Length: 295
Image (cartoon, rainbow, N blue to C red; front, side, top):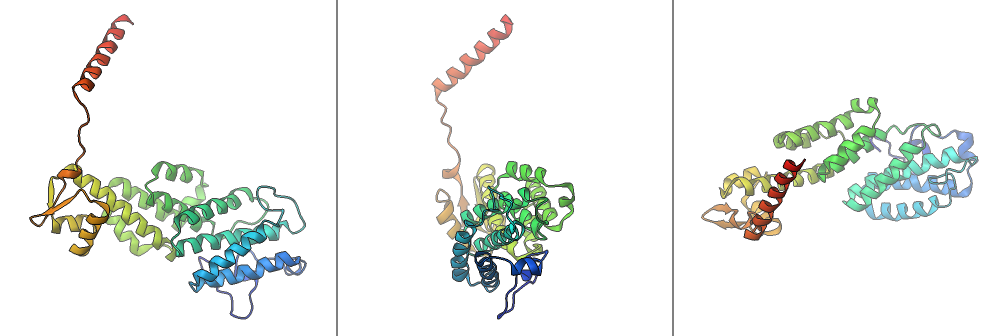
């Protein structure tokens, strides 16, 4: 998953999918449904690694149906003889589901799969060993919140992590990106695109670049009446004039192009306060002053 663990073409074992491996005796005693889940999980992992997205989506749908038949999974957590094996397999399925949703660029499925995966990370402590890929996936979750400009939720999730998680490269990467974002150091954010800790982070970095571009666009409208096209192109991090024009056409229709410049007059916020609004404000302030005298 986050390491090279491709199963072979002819034989697939659960050892290649998650760590620690299932004991041989336990795997032999699995019932048919559990064995089927292990087999299909191997094929799902292989499909994700080969970017066979259609096959991966079909396998994932079948695996989710199989999971409904395993009583040891959340929210029941029944203590069955095969509970440990079932929980490990289910966790590995959702880890692959997160990667598959990233590859097909399905943001809703990505968020849903992450929420389901976090249930296993949080509520199976003491039942099964921690996943070696837990922090990389939690780092993905932080990066998702940052890319969607949900800073408050980013800090909430960060506070829930144990102290040792902060030293993990994937968590540190997300934290450093958030610091650069809050400082307005957008160049550092763009350069960080070249230093992602894993290829699965690239899609979210592209989303983050879009968020940064929207932030810069909003500030430009407030700060300038117009900008030369060459300057606007550089500020909005486009490589060609055509990319800038397409962005304006699709995302900023109120911007105008004239005299080789981008004009923001039509996009500037209009004041909606009329005289009656000012009268109400003055009256409210007058009442406040009178109340102060009374108190």
